[in-house]
Length: 467
Image (cartoon, rainbow, N blue to C red; front, side, top):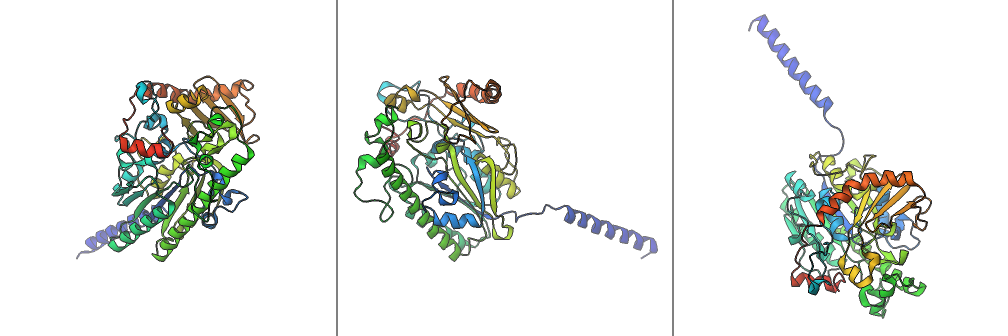
């Protein structure tokens, strides 16, 4: 080998080494690219009824302990106040106006169907979180209890396994058992693939009837079932909930949360036993809250006050990238999808319309669409659609009937003092930001709602969605 050749070879080797070191130096630092992911949705669970958020009652000892080793978001909002559109937003990163899954307009409903719930399912064209995680190599599974999260309504898209079979009385203990069974099966495969497991716990939803010892025995059914007729005058806005009625409802509701928390403890215990807890990124949040007489409202889905759209959000990262603390700035669970995808270094679909939870400028909007069923039963107070927008210290609730509301939300968290008409510069700014959504919603109202089969009608009727 000549001297010239040796020099050329040395230069080539040096170049390769330099290039390798450059790539190494520029590589992205941070968490492992593909941790296991567990997403737990606490259906119908108010943020202020979790003891880790300051609730006086000890409702959530398991979640409290979990929050100590996690990041807890003090002020998270949901993009909707009922299950179907909130989950659709969670899985697409899109607002209800754009993914289209919400109450039907009722304009095309025949008279004999006017008491039936009509809604738009999640359209098959939308890209979902489960699809993106499957594309990234994840084994995906969903176990749900809500009747509006059925696979045929679009929520099974992207899941290798999706269990929505038994929806009348699936309690938290069954969800945790099914989840544990699936995790055992996944672990036995030893494929090296990470998992994405989505769980929907439904217990806090009406009727509030927790099993012993978490609930009171011999509580009259008409008191714990919002649609029994006992509360119709409250829903019509004719009277306030009495202290005794509220006490019964809250005691039973808290009992449901306690029972759910107990069963989540059982799930976490099994995950530790299987060696999966520490390596899993666990996200706990809710799809919406619940009203107990605030603004003469009960249940959820037809308004956008804080008791309905402010939700818990707690994230425990994998042990080797542990983060802890409290994030006080306002965030939206709409940002969960891009946050997950960015964390595992998976491209975020262009249809996602918000940044991650780490971004300061997020889409802080929530929407509620007109429900013809409630207009029929409870009157014109529900004959409207609404959109809520957060703007610094203010929360603007646009109302299609023209009865808009503006609250200084920090000073007035109960939203008792409507400032609409007193701060025109704030209202004008908020209205301008919402106008594109309002115009798009008007266009979406021309679509035809889903025809619901008799089996699903029976299940929805049993839970009060249909009268």
